[in-house]
Image (tube, protein in one colour):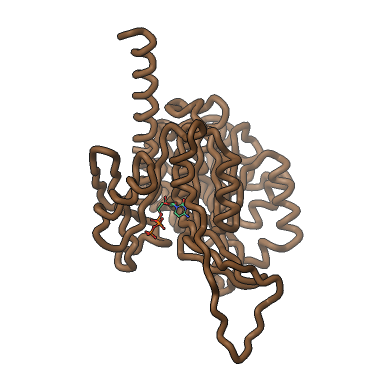
Length: 419
Ligand code: CTP
C-alpha cells in the first residue's frame, strides 16, 4: 500500500462537466484503494458525462448535487461538506468552473462549497486548447494561483474535440500523487518515514543536440522517475528531481530542476549533493554528437555522418563520489534480454547499491506505458515483483528505502548505546 498519507483522509471531489469526467470514476477508485474516504459533488454539467449512480457506487457514499435540496442540506450542509474534508480536488475543472472560482461566484453547490472552503484546493483543468489558452482563462488561472489554489496539469496531446494541444486533464496517477504530496505539506503527514532525508531523483530522457532544431533522444516518458519523486515526497523526504524533457507536470512539493542534455543533468545532480539517497531513473542518452552545429544543417548531396562521444555516467559518478556519495544509490537497468543477469553485471559495473531491472523490449510495453514489471537486485538478493502500475512500483521502492533508513537509524542507535 502507498504511504499511509491518504488513509482515512476525507477528499471532497468536485466533478464538473468535461469529457474527462469519466477519468474521475477511476480517480475515486484509486483514492479509495489508498484508504481515503471520497465524497463527491457532481455539477449539473458533470452529470451529463457521468451518472450520479456510478459516482456513488464507486465512492460508496451518496452524491451531492443540489445547493437547495432539503435532503442534502439536512444531511450535510454545504459548509459542512467543505469543513469535513481534508482537501478539495476539482477534477475535471472546466473553464467555466475556474472562472466562477476566480470571480468568487457561488451559484450552485460546487461553486458554493469552493467559496465556503477553508481547506487546500487542487484543480485539474480540462478543456479545449483554445479555451485553455484564451486570455480570460489564463487570467483566471493566475488569480486562482494567487488565491492559493494548486493547479495540476493540464497535459498536452490529442484532445477529445479532435484538436491537439494543452488542455487534456492530467493522468489519474499524477492527481493521486499530487494529492498525497499536498497532504504531506507542512506537518500534515501522519506517516513520514523519510522526514529529514534528502533525496535526488533523475527522470525522463535527455536531448542531445545536433543543431538548433535536431537532437538525439529516446522514448522515456519520465513517468517512473516522477512517480518515485512524488512517492519520496509523500513519505516526507526533501526531494530534488532532475528531469529531462517530459510532458509531465512538476510533482507538487518537489524541487524540480529541468535539464536538457546529459551534461546538464549531471551538473544539476552534482549541485544537488549531498543527499541521503539517489535514485537514477532517467534514460540518459549514452552518447552525444561530438560537435554541435550552431546553424541548421542543410540538406545537400552528402548524407551527414555524426561522430559521437560518450556521455558521463551519472549513476556511476554518484556511486563513486567519495565523501559526497549518497548513503544509498539506486539505479535502473533497462534490458531487453537476460534481464536479471545483465542487471546484476550493471550493478557491479556502476557501483550502486540496488538496481531495479526492467524488461524494456517493445512487447513488454514499459517505455511510455503505465505499468512496470521489475526485479529489485541488491548485493545478496533478487526480488521479483508482479506487474504493477508505475505509481505502485514507486511506492514499493520508497517503502524499501524507508526500511533501509529506519534500519540504518536503529543500527546507529545500537552502536551509540552499545546494544
Ligand atoms: N545512467 C546514467 N547516466 C548514463 C547512462 C545511464 O545515470 N549516462 C543510469 C540510468 O539512469 C540507470 C542506469 O544508469 O539508472 C542504467 O541505465 P541503462 O540505460 O540501463 O544502462 P546503460 O548504462 O545505458 O548501459 P547499456 O546501454 O549497455 O544497457
